[in-house]
Image (cartoon, rainbow, N blue to C red; front, side, top):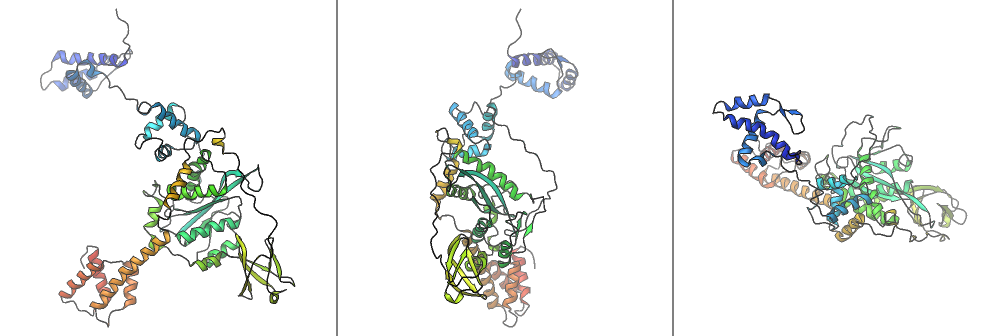
Length: 534
């Protein structure tokens, strides 16, 4: 007498064969087969584990067909392929685990991207499900729990690019303090994001949380991406400064919008950006050799330009940079001189009898005519090598430091590597260094956003000019109104010149008068371009 069957698949096949055998033994003729299947389905059968089971009529019919084709093996369940762990080599599976262990915040997609971009594996070798099963088998796939925020956060999005900018400060990593060897100092990030496109406009780490650092980031964002209509800040003291309000007013930006008190989360976009920066950038510092503020900021620029702004956004269905470019012709830039004047700080001083006054611990000297007179000093706190001196609302002269101060900034200390490399072994993949290298290789290949805006405006102006010239040639001079045409084009253009020319020819061939109001022809051109009848 034989013992129990070791193969559970074969045990299931034998239990199924008991039903199939009953069907085949009775050999039902056509017209009675369905009735027999339903009768067998109503019965209870004994499974391989001794528990009763039933089978649906269609399931029995499939078993009969499989048995006729392949015999008893046809009744066995197909062997399930253990994907992921078995499709990778031992070295590849170990690499995946190392990338996750070095930076636990790395997502599945980021692990695949880093491994492929740095040449650790060939493209298309790692799949998301494969990596997940590898990490799951090693107990490395758990996600940190996060307490949800259940307070009201209505969904909101600005209508166009540069309609609304948001900004916030993010606590960053600890770095060696260049002014105190052997000590660490926290670096913090000021960043700006465009609400409509989610574009990361600019961001910069610094050891200080003061107004000059915030204004420097704001100014760089304005230079590169144009001027917003509104700005949206939390209630931090640095954002509520009088000088920030002065900058906004000078540049023609609407008054600053602040979040509700004790509710700084806003509408979630800048917070979502901060979460992504924590998981995709700050976490990668563990596996990098960054030890200075300059290296940190260079890596962040590479991350924002090559990673975040070009990454497909799940909410938008496109990258932030692509969405911003679709409306680049709407962007308004400010002249550099006006921008410079807007960001200059203003302080009042009274020079002594020798014309010397002090500003931020730096001494300056003016001419003898300004001695003991109330003057206004306009300056950039990040460029104190020269300040502007104004008296009674008029520019008088520029002043330079009277003397060089005794102190100087200490050189960056060749400190210990970051925690990821503290044991002396290099990281498996320095993703931030890879991004920095790519950005350096590209140089100025990527067009400046301001150039793209100017190109879009030139193309629009050329298209509008061609329509204006066409109407001027074809219509009576008594009714042609260039201002009315330009206003119409600003509102509803641009139009294709060839299509407009065909439309005008068709109207004039039909005997339409040339002295009809200009909007009559513009409406006809617009309708023809949209495929509508006049």
